[in-house]
Image (cartoon, rainbow, N blue to C red; front, side, top):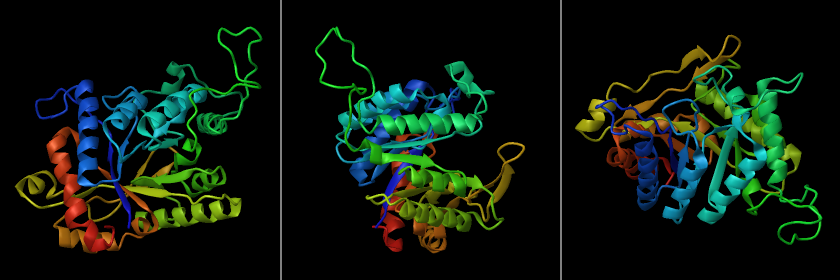
Length: 340
């Protein structure tokens, strides 16, 4: 049994060919898709965050709205770039969204990836401390967020406050108990996956990672997951971790599916560079008839290792078609693999 959710990048484009032509379309359609996915029996509605782009960028209003409109489905991100975040303000926003949803928030965060502008986090008022890299800054912001979500007081109260204070040092409010255990780290390497395990974060591994061994993507990703779990065990955490992987998977059932994705199933991985130093491997996409998909996906070692699968959806094709994409996997593929 696996949890199966969707992951939307929330792209929008004013082109007549797009069913998502504005930021308002992207946001409202995201809510509608989450509601429909819950009705189908999907387990999660996750959203990618990018700044300076025609994509979803401010997740917490969206997450709160989805939480208010749904009752069961997990709501989350995959991922928020911590180079851009004030961790204390983020703790307030995340806790508020979690309380609105009744404790269903699964917050995916990371050190970030190449963005639309150079050093975009500087425009948000952040810069690495002396001797830090931008990745160091993201991890520092993350550690402050994790400490804040423990709910322990740290701020000296005003001796003459506007409103009465509880005794002792104060924490940020609102506080949502349990959210600290529902933070996920999007890891691009084995080392950062192990770092996340030591801090007690769940693991999100996407359709790309650093190419560390030259092996096929799904084998490298499976090794990353095993390294993460070993580090978790060594750290001695009391609760069990969760691991998600993302995949582009399309079941070809009708003429629309064949028109959109009939020629898009990659037969192998791709290799590229995230920057001048970082060689990355990109996992293949899957597009085939259900019986073929079942055979192909059964060979994916990383999916087998994970407890959660996030299906990337082509959101600009509209809510109705994306509901069809999700339903096709839930009904025609998942049962054949023992996921349902």
